[in-house]
Image (cartoon, rainbow, N blue to C red; front, side):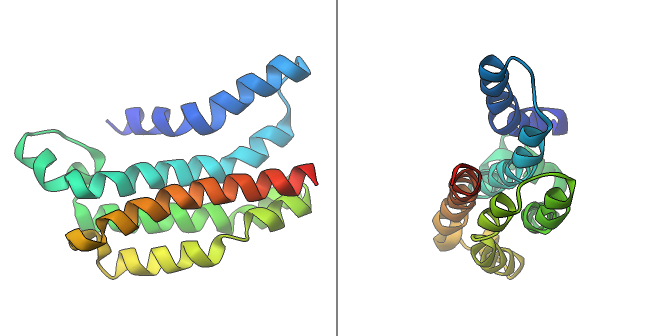
Length: 155
């Protein structure tokens, strides 16, 4: 099950850009790998967030999603850790060759990430009224970070 999650997270945010880049440049580049690593983490976190609303039904029907297997509290902590890691690794990626402008631009949504980490650790995953917010901002963080990082690379 964890393998399936990792593959889902990597397929969209790593393999798709890698394939497109390789088709155009005729060879994969290390810059691309550096650029997509935080996005892979945010994709994985988004997949975790999306599982929270379905947790009870999945458990009742023996659908062994990662949130069901981990338990909601551990899943919330994993979501927080992976989301935080996506932003904490940006300075290291810049030292490894990611353009500083791209790393700085990708860090712009970090305050939203900190807010969502805090809210998740304070139990938003327990409150059905908060599920839309939890899932919306998980998706938004991935999109905002992707657009910001791309803008940092292009401009």
